Image (tube, rainbow over the protein chains, first blue to last red):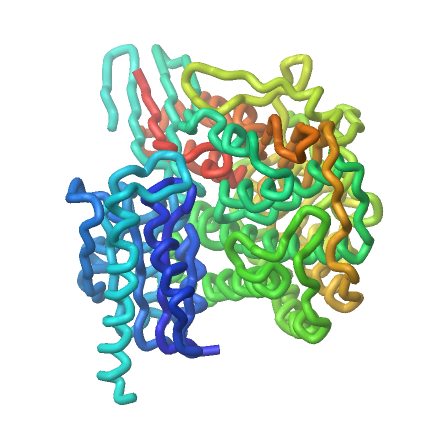
Length: 166
Length: 434
């Protein structure tokens, strides 16, 4: 089945703020989405290659680790040039090839390009994390931004599907 | 990073590429001799075992599944086996078969990932899977196709491909519909063909001519190649159950790592995983897999760690063929789960994760809460053997450049498909020559 919008939350729910992406996806799931959306969360973004085939918009929600203010949300358009430059790299990773998420996001994007599965538009919604230690709960600053991040995902999808002529 | 000195060399490789998870490898070579080899694993000390204490017996499969994004089913199945042993629960054969089918999905997706995207680049002179995809796109497409079939099985049986939600102690929350399972047959026939092509593909790789005197340890199946159950046997004559193995294995804390190092009583390092399973269960392989192994020139015992990629490919055939057999004979279990009545006591369970044997042991209180948990992931059990492999590689490659030796060491680690995430959470690789 081809999905028009694919929303992915990357991370481990047992590494505290690394679970920000899955938490946002879970919030979106509870709010309800159209049938032609796919929601995915997990630690290994390689599996997104199968979901991305034929989609119009791919949104990736992930925790970031840039020494910024915890809970800060950044929205980045990931185009071919930024994939080359290594943007979209999984948080906490010092490299593209591997991360706590197995094969890192940037590698998956590069691979998607080689095998013609790169979505026409990829947007990264990054949430600055505070604590990546062992534990099941998001830190307060990150937990407080889950709703806002979910709202941004819906806005992105609405803009994209409107531009798509629905 | 290399610090050349007159009598000693220090190599520092800060990242171990193409290994699931992160960790560190430190090798010290002094005055032409290997002084120390240490695969360092950083782990919140036994975090998950501590997390499980005080939780309900019913939560063990879901909590432990989160330890690894690559082999969550292995954690679920070993947890279920251990809790059911503690509660003296036996499950219907149809539940066993459905578990095995789900587990086949995990084997297929995990082995396809390792063979094609993590391990094959080593043998083809490629830096990584991207370079391989650019040079041989059909091969990578074949690997991705196999992985998709594995994921499809996990979605159909488990509810989703990552951290399946349909597994519970005693069986499943819901039995998949007959039509949904039957729909797996065609993708699995394609996958079996792709797996056979995979065996042929990897059998033509060039392998270093090395052998190691491994002590192999694996489950031994009853009628079928072991995945979700079996006795535990070894190449030295051990024949025990999961509770027995828990007694036989000594786990030690060492200064360089927060993960425990496993040895068998008598201080022996041992190896679990494809090479061990193959040696101890070759006669239980489906005929199509055994024939593929013979065509690939695989001897009944394979002690060359580099050839583990061939064994993994043969196990892809095993998993596809087994999954197809289970799909074609599927009968929905009714009820989908056995009643489990918690009782005070202990129980152990072991299953074969794609990368090796995974043992869980739990003690339950009268309130059904877990009072203690012990988890022995395959990577922790294999760690000392991997270090022995590394020592051999370094000793045989002292005349190599730092870069070449580092690469050889990384290959030696990748041979065993370590899932550092299972045993630890962050691993950097550092090789030092002094």
